[in-house]
Length: 306
Image 1 (tube, rainbow, N blue to C red):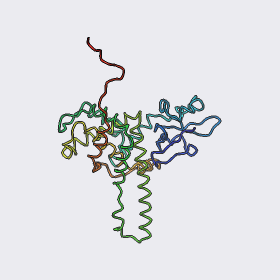
Image 2: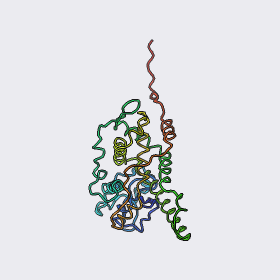
Image 3: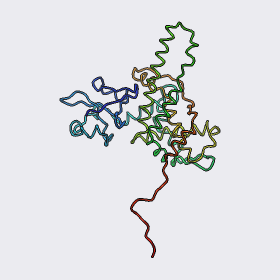
Image 4: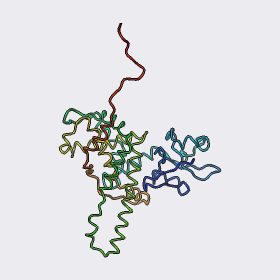
């Protein structure tokens, strides 16, 4: 069956019929099944269609079903669609969110964050947590996607509140219209956050996730160390995962990507600090309780001494 593309800008399905060879940068389309990066292709006797970039989605059910039909002669490199530019655009959006405006060669896009803290460690309440060890643990924890998406949804919902609507000093008709716009934008934002998390925590995106974790690590050292100084070593990777998810939930994906699409200067409130969920204890319990104790390899029994 054809590959279905989901736009990161809107969180909605993106038909290939309305796309061009710049759409992969403007919309950051990803496969609805494996969340892998997609690009536009055109066959000689078929309309435009979405396909995975070379080397992406090798185990995707959609790709394997039609690999013999449209993947034999991919036409992407000559159209200047590259996976590197796809990933760089994702990181550029994070730079814009952090700085509040368009940044040339930002820390995310140039991947300087992970270089800054290579080999770093932090003091926890019962020992020392090392960055590389935390990355390995997060790589295991990211597979619990349902829990991550629940955390992301909670963070995204907390960003928009209708409590102050009654205080708007506008006529009732305008208030209703403003409320409808607010609700529509909130729904769009929640879809975007959901898709961003599915993308960043999927297989093959560890290089992007590493930069986000590095940013959360630096934020902890500079601003949040005193607040969360009672974290234990085994809790710290979960905290980093939660913080990373909170960052993704705070990025105004639709606003930034729409401005870039319309070739306008994107302006947002800089994400100087991110809001973590209040129920960290529950999050720790969910993620840490799922960790299974080590077991002996099956089929290898120690020899008995006579």
